[in-house]
Length: 467
Image (cartoon, rainbow, N blue to C red; front, top):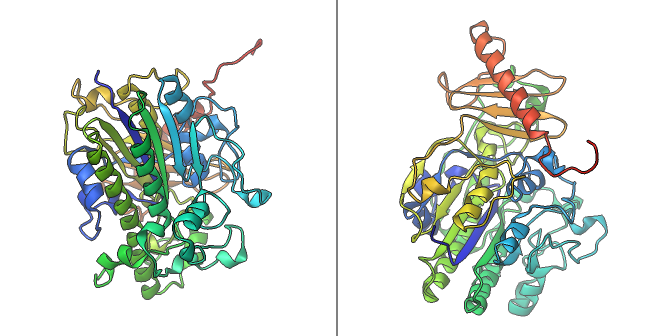
C-alpha cells in the first residue's frame, strides 16, 4: 500500500455533520471543507461515542470506548501513561508527531491555575491550548508575540468562572482572523509544515480547533458571509417533552424562554465560527501545495460531538443523544491514495473507527487493543464499503444509546427509556416506548444495547497475574 508523506488530523468542537456546505447545507460558507469532501470521501453517518468533549476525545484518539479508557464524563484525565494513543501509535510507525491547539485529554488548568501542561501523551512537539484565551498557554504566547494589541480582545474568562455565563449570545470582534484561535492553530500548523518538510520521517499533526464551541466570538471576516442571510431556526413541537425522560424535559425547560432573535443570533455566530475553521483549513491546503505535498498528504476532518443549534428548541450539547449531538463530520482526503474521490458514504460508522483506519492507511500496525474498525481497503478501492449495523454511545452515569439505520434506543438509569422510529419520522420527536406495536422492536433494540454495553465495558488492555 502507498504511504502518505503527511497525516493531518483536524478536529473541531461542537461541529455537526451538516455544518459543511458539500454535506448538504447550502447556507454554510465552507469552500475549503467542500474541497476536501469533493476530492475525498465524506462519511455522513459517523457517530460520536459520547455527548461531551473529554470522553469523546479519549475514545476516538485511542480507538476505545469511554468505559475502556475510564474517561466516562468531563473532568476525568486520561492517565499520562495510557497506551495506545494516537501519538504513541504514530511514533511506533516512525512518524514525527505534533499536537497544536486543543487536545483535552486532561482537565483545564482551573484545577490548580498551573499554566504548564501536565502530560504530552507521547507527542514529539506539543503546542497545547485547551481554551481560546483563558490561560497563559500557547495561544496567549502566540498573541503576545504576533498580535500584542489584540491580547485583551481575545481574552475570555476561565470555563468555571461565573463571568463565562452568557457566552453563547455571540459577539463580533474587530480584529484580524489571523489573531483568532483558528488563526493560531493553522498558522502554527503551517510553520510546522514549512520548517519540518525536509525531515526524512513522515509527519503526523493534530490540529485541534476549538470552534464552533462557544464563546461565539467570530471576527468580522468570519461573520461576513452570514450577515444578510435569513437563517431558519429550529423549534420544539408542542408536547414534545411529554413522553421524554426527565433528563430531556429539564433541557426543554432550561431553554424554553429563548426568543427567535436569540436563536437566529446563535446560529449565525455558530456558522461564522465554522467558517473561521474553514479559513484555517484553506491555509493548510495552500501550504501543502506550496511545498508540493498536497497529493501525498492524508487529511482527516472530524469533531468530538455536535450542537443542538436550536433544533428541538435546544442549544449546546447535552445527554439528549439527539442526532444533532452525535452525528459528526468525518471527511478523509488523500489524492494519491483514494479511489473513491467525491464519494458520500452514508453507512453507519463510529468515531473510534477513524484511528484504526488512518493507521492502516499509513502502513502502521493497528494495536490489537483497539476496538474500532478500519475502512482502509474500501478507501483505497480494494473492496466495497462494509459499514456498521449499529453505533453505540455512552456517558456517565450509565446513559447508553444504540442506533441502527431504522431505530434509536436510549437507556436512562431509573427513568423511562426512549425509542425513535426513523421510518415513522426523521426528527426524533415521538417516543414509541409505550406503543404496543413496537414491543418486538423495543425488545430487539434493548438487547442490542445490552450487548454493545457489555462489549464496550470489556477492557482489551493486557492483564497481568491470575485474573
